[in-house]
Length: 130
Image 1 (cartoon, rainbow, N blue to C red):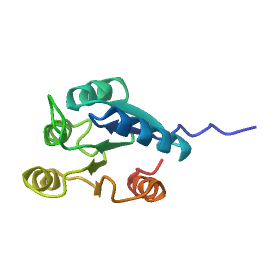
Image 2: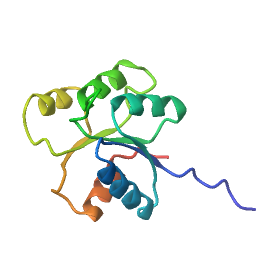
Image 3: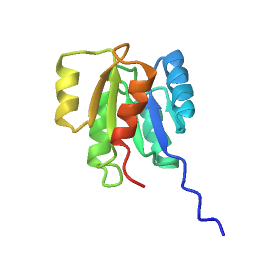
Image 4: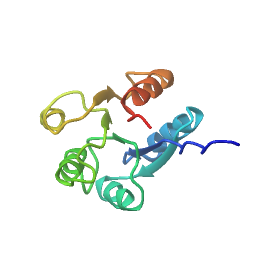
């Protein structure tokens, strides 16, 4: 008798650049993960109401609702306050990065600063145990 298949780990990719979302979603699939995508903070919070991911890969600079506002909403909600968040952004310094750090991100990855294998490894490092 076979045991229960483990559920596929899900990563919510939040980025306002369609090509960036698509590339990361494909990479996650190759790495055995499911990707759910959102084009900004509002869409990300809406997606969270439909399905809670295992981790959020979050850009900082987006229209309508930036990454810091998303982090504030996550940390204020008991359902998501401990949800692992990795910043994946082109912003390397400044107020947004500092504020995001204070709000408790698990990692910070500069876009273009890592290859696909390293991105997958760093995501895997922060996925909660099943």
